[in-house]
Every structure is written in C-alpha cells, then in structure tokens.
Length: 138
Length: 87
Image (cartoon, rainbow over all chains, first blue to last red; front, side, top):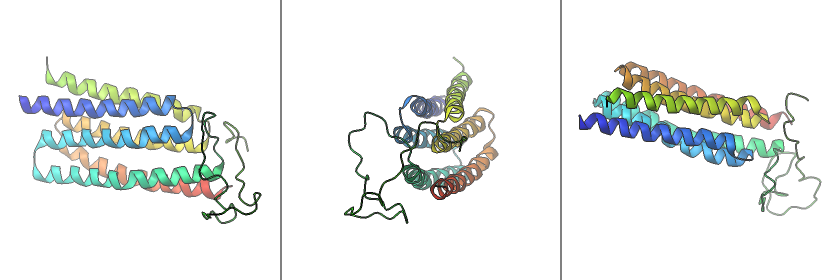
C-alpha cells in the first residue's frame, strides 16, 4: 500500500515538473528563455516518471532499462539544447527586449561560424537580426 | 481514495502540458521555437508512455520510450544542422 503511494507521489511530482516546463514554453518571452525552461524541467519530469515506473515494477531488468533511459536523457538533452541554441543564434532569432548583455555579439565570424576572441571588422561579425515570425514567408 | 485516480491525474497533467506545447508549436514564431516545442512534446510522450505502463501494468511499453528518446535526439540534431546551414 505504502509502496503504491510512493509511486503515485513520484509520478505526480514528475508530471508537475512537465506541466511547469510546458507553461514555461508557452509563457517565456524569447527562444533562449523558453529553452532554459523546457530543457531542465522536462528532463527532470521525464526522469521522475521513469523512476516511478522502476519503483512500481521493482524488477532488476526493468530498473536497468529505466536507468538506461534516464542516463541517455541526461546525456542527450543538454547536447541537443546547445545545438539548437547555437543554430538559432546564427539564424538571428530576436532576443527579448529586456535583455541587458549579449556576450557573443561581435565574436562569431559569420563566414565559418568560428568563435574569435577579438572582433576586428564589425561587418564580418554582424549576424543579421531576424524579425518576429519570419519563417514560412521567405 | 483509489490509487488509480492519482495515476490518471498525473496522466491528465502531462496531457495538459501536451496541449500547451502544441499551442507553442502552432504559434511559432520562428523555426527554432517549433523545434524546441517538438523536443518538449517528445519528453512529454516519454512521460505518458511510462505513466501508461504503470496504469495498465505493462512493462513492455518502456521499450517504446527508449526508441522514442533515441529518435528524438537524432531529429533535433538534424534540425539544428538544417537551421545553421540554411542562412
């Protein structure tokens, strides 16, 4: 009995984190803030729900499978989020208007996408700023 | 209170999150926003599969979660390459 309650509580906690991630995706003002809301909270939520499954079944084979999924998520979600964030920055996704500092401005060469410490000519490093909602049209 | 009610409440919460993620998928406004929304949809699908496996006592469904996690990573990386090269 207690065992099932623990499973239900872990599962509800994971579902709550996933719901928070979705609300963050919908409500945050720009892409990078949305990614910071989803990538962490959704990984934690999926990990907790999988952990609930491992606790519920309580067999070593299933626990091993669940651990494999959790480790795989922990490895791949940050890599995927970094790739998407980097690509979006080159794509010129607009930042939130309340953004104070953009540390990367003027340090990425647009020709080969390399990071350079000292920016020399400003045109070579200027990433074109996109408009809100500019895909599907061009 | 029946314990299965709690499982169904958790499934309902994840489904509500799925609806919110789909609203962001439709509204955009840019392609990377949609890719992030698809990423979240896949994470929510993994949660739904695990909850479903618990609710109906079917551990075989967890294999599907492994496959979906693998394919979603490949898809996100492919989208990232596409977004970076298309400029």
